[in-house]
Amino acid sequence: MNWDQFVALLREHQRQIAATDHLINQMQHNEVIGYTQADERRLHALGDLLFAANESLIGEYYKIKDNAPS
Image 1 (spheres, helix red, strand yellow):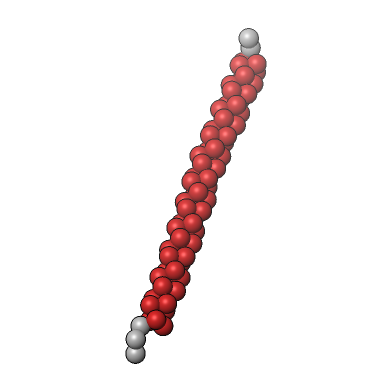
Image 2 (image 1 turned 90 degrees about the horizontal axis):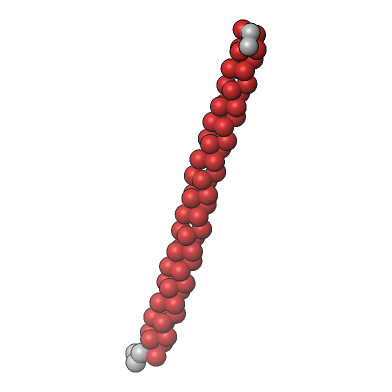
């Protein structure tokens, strides 16, 4: 193997390492986004539950208030 072939081989390996590094970084980024989106969905679901519970409580309050003797 001459010097030019050796340099070409090293450059090819360097390109493969860079491509692999890029894929790993992209996977990590996608994982973070995935967790963020899952957390957002959980927070929205929790907010919906709290809103529904609050609406139910207000409804019960007015039922009791309307039926209470004056």
